[in-house]
Length: 437
Ligand SMILES: Nc1ncnc2c1ncn2[C@@H]1O[C@H](COP(=O)(O)OP(=O)(O)O)[C@@H](O)[C@H]1O
Ligand SMILES: [Mg+2]
Image 1 (tube, helix red, strand yellow):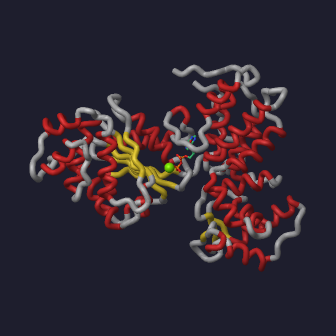
Image 2: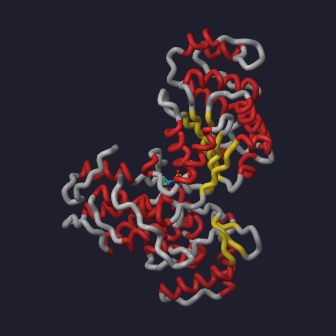
Image 3: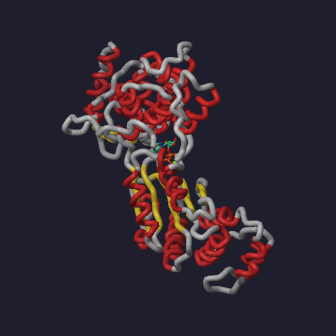
């Protein structure tokens, strides 16, 4: 078990402070440790069950930013046999199936200095399950060949897996970037073959999408080899726990009010709460008195800094949509993000806008102008920040951008809709961890 630093923030030096911060708060890198992965117990259990089944693999999917890579990598480190590290590969834009297979093989054999010997003892045969003579020759030279058929890819991966470890786990991330239907079909066939032929690897695939059909097309024949692990947005309680654990480790007291407000801004996308948390603890650390309790001024500073230090691509989307125009566009985006439903009817968004304008002490936009703004935000000139699937309904094209809108609104002093922080009975969530075990 890891030692938990129970010193107070006032007593630690800057190095200790930074290292504790980095251990608990990772706004831009995936989680790999189970004890830091909040609110995904059910999904980890489902993954465990799937991987325990021979010939079964896993597909983790959901919105961008919801935590797919974190779940996939945490599971990969849990289930990889102890004689190796899991293999992590990402898809590039427009990657072909064969390039992906080569990349997996490359990573599986990467650290093996005895490759040449291994190839000769493994042997090659024309056809069948084994390496072809061409592939064996290439591997003996230390070059991983690019396969040219699904059978060849299966044979290559079987060999590469044997060079890696007893039971390699391979994470294939950003699968949505493989866009060609033909490559998806080849990949589907590949999954089927490695399952049917009991190739001893486990695949954990990740991609942006609501369903496996979104990601793999209509190749349903491979779906039965894949457990579909859908990740919904992270709940308020697990979001609060992310910062609470860091606070406990730093010996900082933080009122539930602030934790809840941070969690509500994040609205299911953990990047934001990690980021606000970091800024919050810095703000305490840099306070001359080094207080051990979070106050409003620290929180305000944290929100401000978080707006500035959010991931650049999120900022860019927001700025492209709003920058060169008057503030109406910002208010309209805040209004859409005001409530946690991912898709909202424009009449409701208009009501939210009314509430926001009232809070800001500004007159409500007239309806015509509002409609115009909403429509403009779907256009190229505004980066197509919004889309609509049905008439009169709107959503963010990248749902993770909602969190940034909420952050900006909070900075401007707008109190966001609070209803979704409580369950339908109006009860508070169950008590949370007090101490990290
Ligand atoms: N369950 C979780 N608990 C705590 N932090 C999380 C969790 N899931 C994701 N994060 C954090 O959120 C951010 C985005 O997660 P990531 O796994 O990269 O999302 P995705 O792959 O879906 O885009 C990362 O900074 C990561 O550390
Ligand atoms: Mg990811």
